[in-house]
Image (cartoon, rainbow, N blue to C red; front, side, top):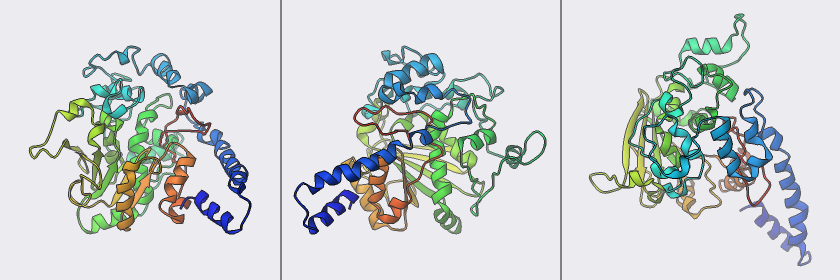
Length: 393
């Protein structure tokens, strides 16, 4: 039950007048939303970046997607102004940024319709920010070493100034963009956090909530199985999820399965099918301990989570910007988690109001687990029907 349903039932029992729900709406909902909006400054705080993100947090960006597009083109220089004219961009640098504008629209958005998930790209090509790694604008395309960790923790004077330790599962306790940038040798002038929010959110979910699944998978000597449900724009930068593998300990093998609804596939993916005509599928060995699988279908309906998604039942289910409370299509996912209590479910949302309603579906313990993701996107998302602070992930 949501809080409003419970309170209405209580009010009815107390035999208050018929206009009680209306009074309750103002006396309870308004202060609640006021508390949500009071956290705008906290959610907008990224003091360690070199100010490139500030124009993305202005009022203009809170109410208009056009402001984002202009700044992506003219300010950051990561988009070309004629991206929406429908021309092919497969050979261009920086294509990973294209789907940040115009929306996904079932794979048919202005830039989404050109996505070809079968094309492999390295960081240099995908980000398009430099011709090499020397200027620190992109992370090095390799696994994190113990030397990297030591350099992250110690300044030039040799004194320890950053605390970065591994947990009992050997996972790095990353708690901020600042520490991540330092660990990966990225300049604070670089805007790559805008895209890295997606793989870092998956890693953070594993690190924060995956201790039991990681331990069990090691004991059974198999991959830890993570199903990522509701995948859309992530199809444009699959190779970026190498970053999850680069951060994982060497002895933890993860099978990451992306589940994409068939009506959300971009056209170039819809033309492909497997030999058994069950839909689009792909397998990528991103790193030596991270395998990425892609399957198309509806989780819990046309796809049985125990048999049709990777090598077996999930240890974790992750949904980014999910909106469990808003879309009927999530019903099967919630039902599966409800009937499989041993599976860990982790979901992000755009704002606290939606996050609270989504978390409430799992009961009081789930609701109390709601927290701020340190790897949310450092930009305000446009909001057209309310004034809540809204961020991706």
